[in-house]
Length: 115
Image (cartoon, rainbow, N blue to C red):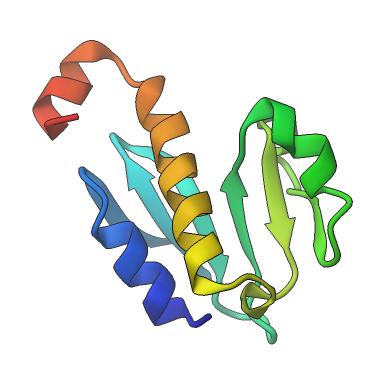
């Protein structure tokens, strides 16, 4: 897995914006709400994303995963190396994270984004 593949997966999702926050994090958002953060100043490259409430505890026990700093209470996980996950799994996790965040957007914002 590479940053470019994550970018492609995220940018193929509806209503996504991409920007740099905190000087060194690549952030993907929908409706102004983050759903994936990739650390650009780390080697190996790490990332954080939102997961389903019922999957959070188990995923935090997987090798390389832990609760994401600052946002774990919102059921975000952090992975120490994006290469630990296959592309097909990344696609599933990122689509799910996008959907979880998009589902909580106000109806007006969803309509504007075509969601």
